[in-house]
Length: 270
Image (cartoon, rainbow, N blue to C red):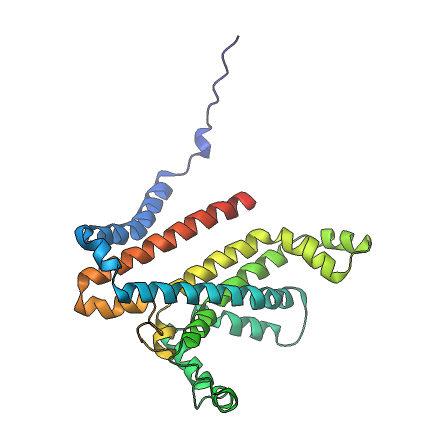
């Protein structure tokens, strides 16, 4: 049996040394702060710190708000992305800019805008309060709205990119064979952009889970009512540094596990 020939890699395929060095610096930019955080964790007291009422309440609310925001972004973001990608209409560029604005808008400004629009005396909030008695600011619903506002653009932009890159000949072939619009959408379009939808879900959830500025401005910082994990870190950072570090570690672990697990699945799907 003859030995398997060894493959030799073309030296020209190797990246330049400078590129590798710069990539290493980039990795360090992300890794060093995390290493610094892990180095300050009070490991002996960690279970006790994470079992406190403030952490349990904040984790529960963070999960509720981030999952709710992701579901809302899924229900509203995909139709919005479809309209922006497939329909030509006056003002489309402006609407796309408005939808993308929360990505670059300071979170505190986003919270203030929500307050002026949906507060008790806001543009829409006053009518909502008079009709239903529902006060959105300083409530759990306020947290969900704030996180959805800042996180949903990730879903819209990602799915719109997937739709624009989709070969529409497959949809045309399905329509030629007699499939209706909804059938084409369900059986052809959505399955083909599934990796984009999944990546949009991951990014939306991650942004919602870590939201701080818009939440504290619009919904306040009330324990068990509007205080998410980032807000709990803000409160405990001045009163109990060990607790702040423990909560920060919890956020890092939860976010990293979700991002790595779903991102791997996303790449395999692609």
